[in-house]
Image 1 (cartoon, helix red, strand yellow):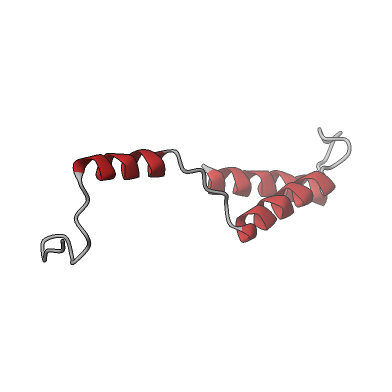
Image 2: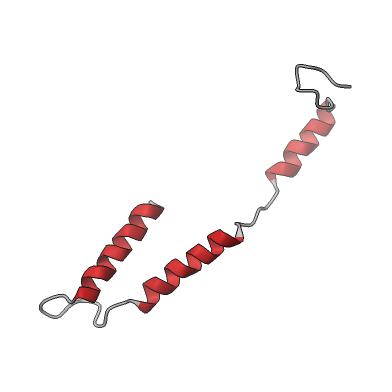
Length: 79
């Protein structure tokens, strides 16, 4: 049974429609590989570039300035 009102799709009975909604509601999707890779790159860069000591003693180094800017940019992007 098709109709123009539903775009030519087969009309589902009420039980079938309820089942479809339930099934899609519980569907677990995984993020795309590019998202996983991007997340890992952010974590690796964040870990590798942690300045030592974390709190600058006296004048901050260029690494401190870069790292705090990096963390701010990530926080802004994720927020």
